[in-house]
Amino acid sequence: MIMEPFTAGKKEILFFPAEKADRPLIIYHDLPDIARTVWDALHEEACPDFNLLTVGNLDFLYDMSPWPCGFLEQNGQSTGGADVYLRSLVEHIIPAALERIKGAPQFIGLGGYSLAGLFAVYAMYRTDRFDRIASMSGSLWYPGFEEMATTETVRNAPERMYFSLGDREARTRNEYMATVQDKTERLVAFYKEAGIDVTFELNKGNHFKHTLARSVKGIRAILREEKSAAGREYL
Image 1: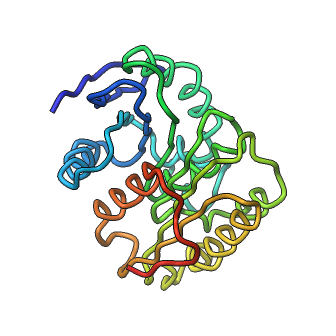
Image 2: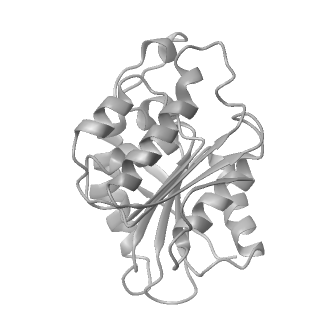
């Protein structure tokens, strides 16, 4: 496995290059120790050749959240920095990655788990840089997000989107998080009605169950060349 670490936009980057030229670039956000595992797991399943970029030393709550959220700040942590981080991603990190890619990427996909899944969907309302979106167990319960997503216009309608949730994620006493399945399903229907190729998978388990497998499935889904089958899948 060839892996190139570098620094851009004050972030620590791990870049895993494709074997061939002009292959897709997937940008994936998650906890730092997940990146190498995701790359290995994808290649064990003989997925299509692609470039993978992961970003380390994220301030996860701040960098991945679109605006302040009071109950997430109870331990003194800040939220609402997604616009700041997204600007750095587009202006510094992606250009640095493109210098390392063989040829030009066929497309650029953005994916993530939990709050990073929320960030992936949010990003398409603030930049036209991404062609495919993957939100695995995305925090689409986030206060005000559904309203924003259904009233604002995306900068670049993605050619493919992937969403997944665990079937027990909404079983929580938290009034916000308890809405995650309803809000995710409504957004899936909204994007399908807009003509986007959307896949939604409902997995067994809660938010913390089989996170690696869910991430791998999401990235594989947006790497596919063929269109997805209509409807919801239960895995």
